Length: 107
Image (cartoon, rainbow, N blue to C red):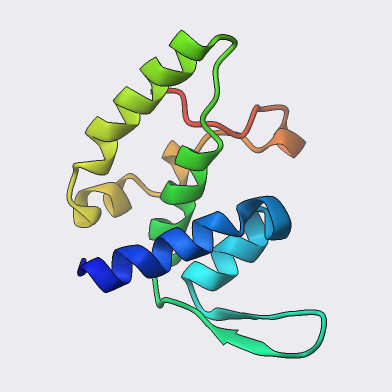
């Protein structure tokens, strides 16, 4: 990933509070049309890549220490090659809130 691509991804992440996870996912992947009808081209990430980043952003614990601990575990996961992570498939994803989960990845 180039420095320019990193900056583009950070700009997408910066919109998380305003657009929510689905809006950020659209910006990271194929693109998004806003309320005015303007189209913003996406970064071209795969769904799996965007989902991993969004799960990281949703990482939280009961305390700051627990949150930091979980984020450090994410550092290990994120250092794996994407080809290995994609082999894990959706079965490794945490249950969504609708499924009774917290929507986070418990490593």
